[in-house]
Every structure is written in C-alpha cells, then in structure tokens.
Image (cartoon, rainbow, N blue to C red):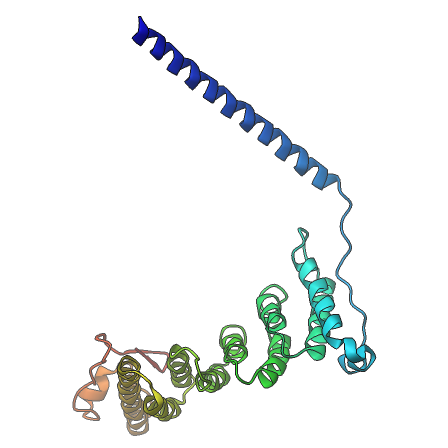
Length: 280
C-alpha cells in the first residue's frame, strides 16, 4: 500500500511539473509575440545624422573637451549601428563622418579604429575610406600592429592589391609583440604580387630577429619555398625567352633542359602553376 502511494505521488509531481513547463512556455510565446507586435507598430527610428563640420574646425571648436566630444561621436555612431533597420547610403555617409570626426579629436583611442574596420569596409563598402582613416590610427598608435594589419587586410581582401597589402603586413610584423604569422602573410602576398625576391629578403631579416627556434623553423620553411618559387619563375622566364611563349606546365622546364629537376616543396606538396602564377 505504501509503495503504491509513493508511485502515485511521483506521478502526480511529474504531471505537475509538465503543466508548469507548459504554462511557462505558453506565457513566453505569448509575451514574445506581443513584444514583436509592439516593435512593428513602433515608428521608424531616426536615420543617422552628423554635422557636416570639417575635423580640423571641430578640433578647434572642441578645445579642452576633445576627448569627451570624440567619445560622444563614437557613441552616436555605435548606437545607430546597433539599430534594427536597414542602413541606407546616407546613413553610412553619416556614420563615416562621425567616425572621421571622432578619430580627428582622439586618434589614440583603439575603439574608434576597431569600429572603422568593423563597419566601413564590410557594411558600407567603403574600404578606401576605411584605409585612409586607419592610416591616422596607424600613425598615432605607432606601438600597435593592429591598424597596419587592418589596412593590409583591406588592401588584400577588398582592394585586391597584394603588393600594398604585403608592405603593410611586413611593417606591422616588425612592431614588438606582433604575431609571427604577419611576416608569413606579408611574404606570401609579396610573392603573389610578383615580388618574390622582396619576400625572401624580408623573411631573412625576420629570421635573424626571431626569438624562438619554432619561429626560426617556420620562417626557414617559408624562405625555402619562396627560393624554389624564384627558381621556377626564372625558369619560366628563360623558357618564354627561348620558345616565345610560357610553358604550359612546370614539367616542361625539365623536358626543355632548363631545370634538371623540379624543386621539392618543403610543405610536402607539389608546386602548382596556373595563369602564370606559382602556388605552394
């Protein structure tokens, strides 16, 4: 009898828990639906706006309050960017103006640099404008590798300029405490931009500055790979000069007697040759 009462009690508690969950879930769905309806009935928020004042004039007018006004302008742009509505071209132009003015008043504040990179190249499709603003951050935050890295990325990804991207990444990699990977990326983009020798020279300089054996090994592998690429590039040039056209494959360099054999990629995969470019 006692065991039967326990089972009945447990069953009753289970039913009670299920009912509580159903009630809470129903209330949640009802409230969520109500909130959504209220949001849809709300009037459209104001569009982004900025005073069309030149940064130089604004800096003079701000006087000793430059830092406070810079924070206000950045906050104004960040609040708008967190909105729920679709952004127009006019909105982005206003956001750009706000960020440019904020940067002029306080070029040392990293958050402004971050917002410029996070929104202008991606949402606004204003990569060139972003690069111009990031140059200011890079100049003033000379101890920080991040602005140079942002510029290098924008030049590579958005502006399709490998050589300029390589230069910025190489410069950023020379700043203390920068990630070792930056030097690798810079050299790789130099090779893609037709500046293989520049990449080799740069990596050799980085090798001398490397602080650990692990970094030295990584850089050494990259130097070997780029040296092989340079050998292949010279072979292609010689083949083109001899036959009046570039080879269709790297194997033709061996068949034509220009190279005794193809170099072995230190990364344990064959070198590729496509559209006149060598990959590894």
